[in-house]
Amino acid sequence: MNHPKKERTFVILKPDTVQRGLIGETIKRFESAGLKLVAMKFTVADEDRLWKHYNKDDAWFQKKGDLSVKNRIDMGMVVDKEPIEYGKDIVRALVNFMSCCPVVMMVWEGNQAVAVVKKIVGGTEPTTSDVGTIRGDLTLDSYELSNRDERAVRNLVHCSDEVSEAEREIALWLTADEVMSYRLVSEQILYDVNLDGIKE
Image (cartoon, rainbow, N blue to C red; front, side, top):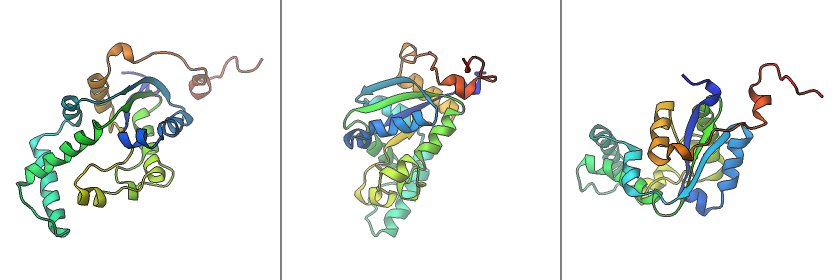
């Protein structure tokens, strides 16, 4: 098992981050926390890999579809197909959004990187995401608006939920030689036990 300081997580800066000129602001927040950038790729995501990335099965589609049907009825919208198709529409909308223009894919490394990035990014629903998080501070979209418009929520950043998911996503989008191993000088103040050699 790797040392916790070597934990890695996968991040995608979504099309709304790119189009709104928020790439630098977003990266700055991860760097300010002490995380180390070990991979970055600017690319247009292909649809086939996006479906693999979201990695949903029929049970997930059915569950989300049932909820979508309930929401549509509550909002006075027409229900004109089976619930499972509404569930699949969620991923269809995500794939359409995520492939509409370039995105920035990154791998960040550091102590409990998955949890740290999730904390910085904030909850997936922008209107209830905490102030101080990327989503809480920088976007005003909501599930309600995206549902009414039948599109993906524009919440700026994708980040892995757990270490195993990060490993799967990194392997899906990046080759091993695209992920760097190197030392940052700042790692000494973050991780060295005795801080030997700081004084001159």
